[in-house]
Image (cartoon, rainbow, N blue to C red; front, side):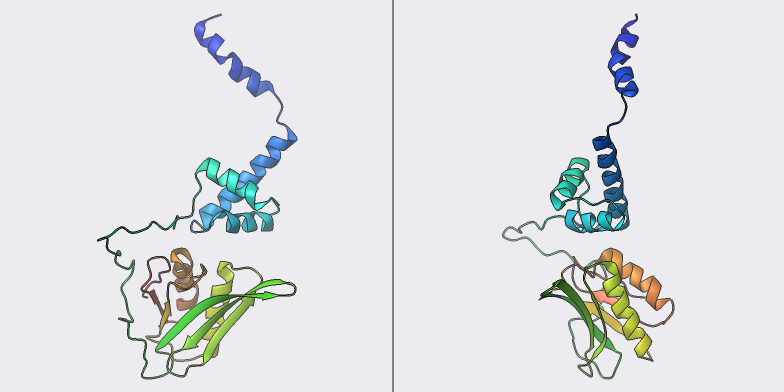
Length: 214
């Protein structure tokens, strides 16, 4: 037996060994988490676990953390680092269309969006509300038991369907949003909403939650 064949013996033994049920379940879970991470790279392991459960792969959050950390599947936002003395906050990812002037001279000029969490007797509910700065009225909203991308998309769709004359309208989100408005989502919203109801622009002065001017 040559040296190469001798070194390959463990590999051949492993190849001949049947896959156990535990290993198969772990592989299916890892595939579901990877698919969710690929589609939503900003999600942490808890949200990825939710997505995996929806895909038919139930698991505990701790299990999702172990699989994600073992494969290096981290949120695109990562953990916030403490800024030392003299460090500067980086520029926003997209231009600040509002220029920190939160006033409007008419309806449908500037909208503000926020997501809030509410505890009920049956569990958590998430509300995404969109407010018109000029009228101070809620022009669109959506409610869901999960804080997923569809929550914000539904709120924008609701607002755009109820209002006319959106040319030049800006939707602003800020750092207070708990995760529903982010890089991936607002790019998606821009394509899904603005493509049908032209004129709506999305923006944020936040590094964590940014939009896109269309």
